[in-house]
Length: 213
Image 1 (cartoon, rainbow, N blue to C red):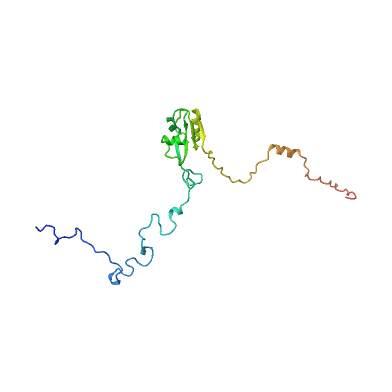
Image 2 (cartoon, helix red, strand yellow):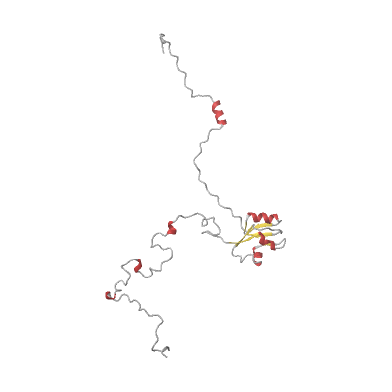
């Protein structure tokens, strides 16, 4: 049959296109610069695979924009250059323990509340706690301490509580306040030593001045 496939009628489904052969002389039409132009960035290899945000070498937009204060500051936790990661859990998670239990990081790991002991443990105050527990952790929130102690339990800090640094405020110019009533009273009581001297009596008209005057 004419429609049978054999070696004499094999051909690709789509017509094949010959590859572009560059750098084969000026007569080929793709010689000398091989279709890349003269010099410049686009004439170099790898110039069409630029990273996202690349603006040709000029200062990129994310560096030209103003920087905002916030999560990358020194006191911002747990992100920023001074990051510290902790395992956090709430007081409602401690309600599973029986009254009088001494809750430690090791017990929390055994119960599955924390994954490992490579990080510090911090107890937060979300939820309610109705059992008396002795909780030992590296950090506590203020509300967590209040709820644990309100249930009759105790809190043990494995690290000293974190105290935020006090910011230094620049001293403004000295304010010119009005003098107080006491200062005004003292000033009025003192004699006025700087009073003007009494003026000499002038002679009357037609009277001769006395000798020595």
